[in-house]
Image (cartoon, rainbow, N blue to C red; front, side, top):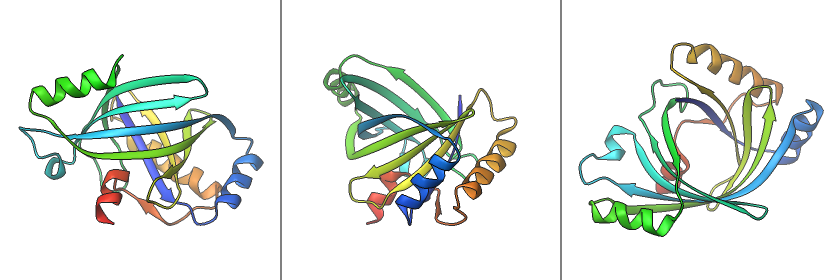
Length: 179
């Protein structure tokens, strides 16, 4: 699966929420996420631009846990990359397995995320501990054959929301590490 994702820093949160409302973009849910990132004993993820994380989510009374691999970004315009994700039952046991085979926890990223749906796009307003608010727009593809046209559509949607600058390719982890 290819995740075509573009994010931008939000300068005026109230204005963005008003634009979402005016475009009839419906809110799906609000979710708390805690991500534990791991360093590999084999590959330097910072150099290869890959990531391995465990994510625990809470929304209403529902909790979910995922193990996610993110490949390196495939262009210079966005955060488009391969993503492989599976559900798991126990974050502590999964973390222990990763540690036993040489992976080490490297960072924790915590955020509150408001999910919105517009056509086949998922939008999220992200409130990451230690960072300013961001908005992400993503679209999931089976392969990367037409990701460039999807990117153009995402940038058009940003324009409709009144966002034409503040785009960021770094992950939240990278942004926090730069602080």
